[in-house]
Image 1 (cartoon, rainbow, N blue to C red):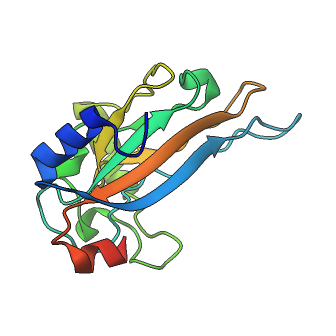
Image 2: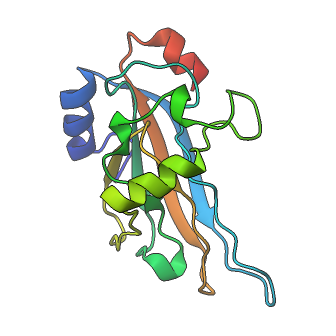
Length: 165
């Protein structure tokens, strides 16, 4: 897998249009817990914590560098929530501590429709998600660091949006 993986590029181009722009590249690691510590998780949130279009305008491509599973902290995802996004579902505004965090009442309601999942994902797979999708980082209960690449792509014509992500 490279930054220009042909399969990921074909999929992101089909959704975002030709020549999607790489706007963010990072490593995402779930560290093992220290002995005696309390397991912590991220609040459920959307990475689109700003006013944005109601259609897919940015995609995140994740590549796990080891097998990911609930034991080592695979990301919790809330399938289908990309269509229920925007500032109306969030507790805080862009730049605030609660920025992107999904309101608790909406989480409880959503659990009755489609509860979240922590998928089993083989090393080297490609995971593509809409930037608007609700998700949360989860604790790693193993002794190994869970490492995943994270790359955001946007259409090149979304210059203003790309600068805000």
